[in-house]
Image 1 (cartoon, rainbow, N blue to C red):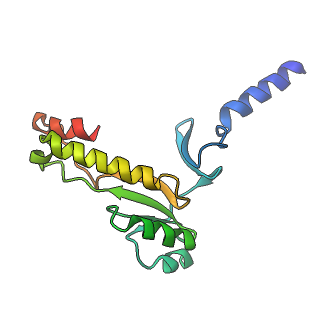
Image 2 (image 1 turned 180 degrees about the horizontal axis):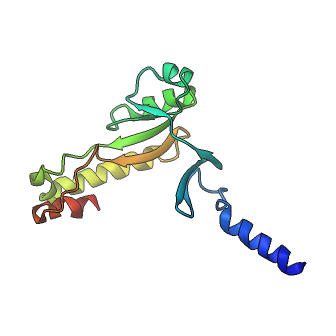
Image 3 (image 1 turned 90 degrees about the horizontal axis):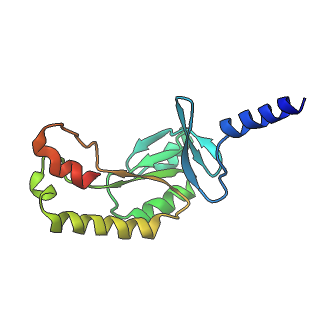
Length: 153
C-alpha cells in the first residue's frame, strides 16, 4: 500500500504544473504538449492583432491582443486590463534582410538597451502576457544572415 501511495504522489508531482506562487506567466511541458499558465491557470490565447476595439474583442470572446511595437504601450496595457485582456507586446526589430542594422553594434546595442528599459518598465503589468521579439522574423540559413542570428539570439 505504501508503494502505491508513493507511486501516486510521484506521478502527481511530475504531471502537475510547477508551483506558481512567484510566476505570473509560464509555459509548462507535459509530455509533448506545452501549456501557457497565467495566474496559476491554463491560458489559451484567443486574440487579435492591434490595440483598438478591445471591448468588441472581449465581447466576441477574445482574451488577448498582440501589438507590433511598444508605442503607447502603457496606455494599451491599461486599456487591455480594463477589458480583462492579455497583451503580447511586440518589440520591433528591422527585418532580417536589413543587414546594415545587424552589422552595426552601436545600433544593435541601442536597440537592446531600449528593449531593456521598456521591459523593466512594464514587465510586472497585470495585462502583460509575454513579449514578442520582431514581427514575423525570417530566419534564413544563408551564411550572410549570421549577423542577424547573432543579434537576435
